[in-house]
Length: 148
Image (cartoon, rainbow, N blue to C red; front, side, top):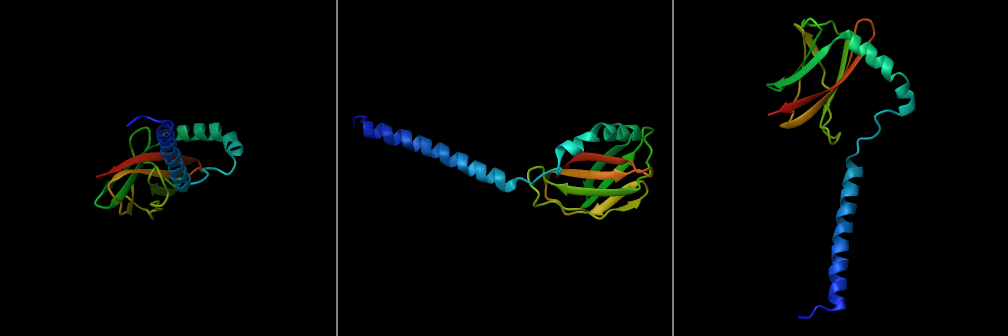
């Protein structure tokens, strides 16, 4: 069969059609899974960023999260390795790619650990937490969590 102009046009149009269809599909999926804004006004948020960072670093806290037997455990330790006093704790547990699985566990505190019941599927999760020190300093951190 000879290669005619009509066949070349059909091959070229088909190739571009596939490329355009894939681009449209990927754009629709990207917009559909976009969780939204992190802050309402990034300029306003940036004005206190350095001061907030310095105050958080001055606390010297380290946070660690793990899941065992459907219980989420979060521990906070100071520079000396001992548990620190946390006034309040808010956390959101979710996937990095979308917000449909996000949960906000209800924590209880005992013996230096915050614990909350969670039913997480296996895979990678993020714990986005905001803890407050007794002096009002906010401690924000995102902890990576892998569930087997």
